[in-house]
Image 1 (cartoon, one colour):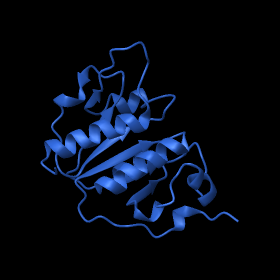
Image 2 (cartoon, helix red, strand yellow):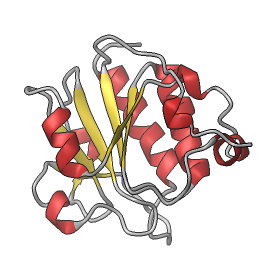
Image 3 (cartoon, rainbow, N blue to C red):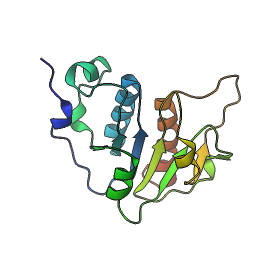
Image 4 (tube, helix red, strand yellow):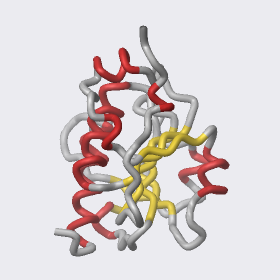
Length: 165
């Protein structure tokens, strides 16, 4: 029997330094890795639906996520729901291989939201064009980095920039 883990009681982090937002993530293993990072760094994770996988014990355990209750996680039915529910002064900063400015140029503030698109499509142009958006440089002959790698790079960079460690 599998249970819907959206019903599991999660940890609540008061005033997290950052928020990681996954817009319609498609691959459960990436979401699992990102959730582990968020739990370890005490960063809140937001998932914007629809998801490309089921959120239940069996599927997430397969992705290595047996500590789901340690993640401060919020589910949003769509992007507009995130906008309605986020703190008024918090900014949303997007990340895309299509952006021209590097992520190191961004100056984040406590409580900002870091928005990442789905693995195969990236952020939709309408959202990407409405936000400050940054890229991670790639010198090799690949199109993009793995989503969980990208989230790790920028999240820890900004936590360090803010003096968290």
